[in-house]
Image 1: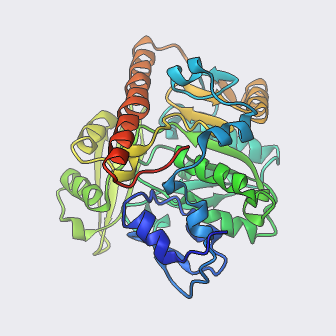
Image 2: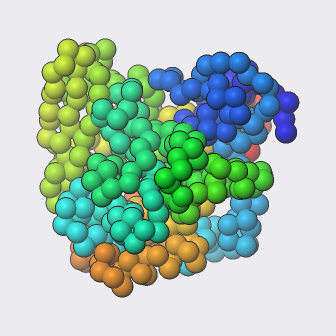
Length: 378
């Protein structure tokens, strides 16, 4: 164990902007002295310098080939590396059969439907998902919620385009005797954090022993800083950033119209309806989150199942089994063919894969040569 204090985590990860706000440092802290605040992890008590936060931190990177062997029993082939989606057993284009869930989800509610199926079959007691709005103490991040009902799952449906410290919730799950098994939902960075923790020998601790499934989300990294996020929300609603107290948006039509609602400090609310492409065009004008510039994982490659666009990518036998059962029981159904949307999805895949696997890799090597701090994936 590293004999390092929180000060070293701050120096190596937070101050260098390698933190992506996953929340794992707070969850593993043996003293409970790391809190997640509006600017990320902060020391909130006496540090014992046990080093667990620094050792577990996926912001510093993770031994990816070792994680592949741990999760899949082998490393990626050259062909799999070139394709850019990682190791998988099958890749299906499915959506929820539940019209309510399908309407709320951005790509057919496939993940929400599978979580609801697992709850119904009592294979999990809850799922760690992410909620917008009042669930979050800060307007510019979504927040982890332990969902144990279909209603809670639906509240968490849809893309957020901001960070959520989902791994914070591992500690609450560990301390809840009513929860014996969970599915953890997160981005590729969250999945790497989970797998790195197991790799470090923490698999028998309370933090991981209740995790039955790890479900990842495809991520093209449209993340921005707190200030940039509040700036583009301010641009959409034409209100000063300092007046924004909460943020929430949800899909409201099959054509991907979204209702974008903000709560103001004075208690009032503002609502706008716009198309998702309009929202993404606004987001794209702002800088990406610094740490995302070094991410090489578009498809959440270390999950049991990855979800996004036209993909339900089953990676482990356990993941493929549950998808096949949900399909057989009618909870998931094949997506209706749509040549235009399918071509758009394929184009997005190729664009994000090039960014993650080529552009970001070149940036890592360049920064490393220049002595700048970068994550280590060796």
